[in-house]
Image 1 (cartoon, rainbow, N blue to C red):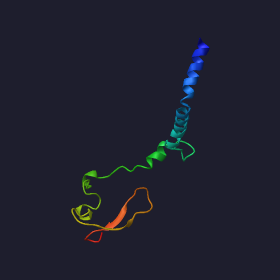
Image 2: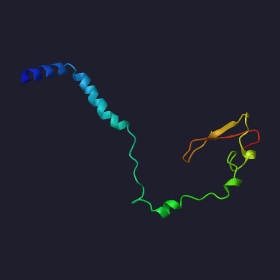
Image 3: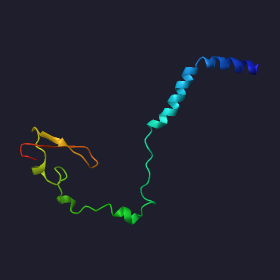
Image 4: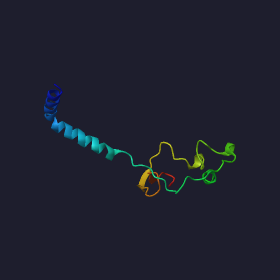
Length: 105
C-alpha cells in the first residue's frame, strides 16, 4: 500500500517538474538580492575612550539658532524664489546639487 502511494505521488509530482525547477531557481536567487553583510573595519571592538572622541558636548545651546541653522536667517535659502541649477554634487556621502539664487549663493 505504501509503495503504491509513493508511486502515485511521484507520478503526480512529475507533471509539475517545470514548476519545481522554477521554485528551485527562485529559492536559490533570493539570496542574491539580500543586503551584503557589514564587516568590521577595525581588528577589534573600539574602546570607550575611542568612541568618546567622536562626540563633542555642545556648549551654550541656548545661544544657538536651532531653527535657521549656523548661518541664521540671512543665509537661509530664499523662500519662493527660483534657483538656477549649476551642477551635481560629486564626492562626499550625501547626494546633492549646486545652484544659485538671486543673491548669487
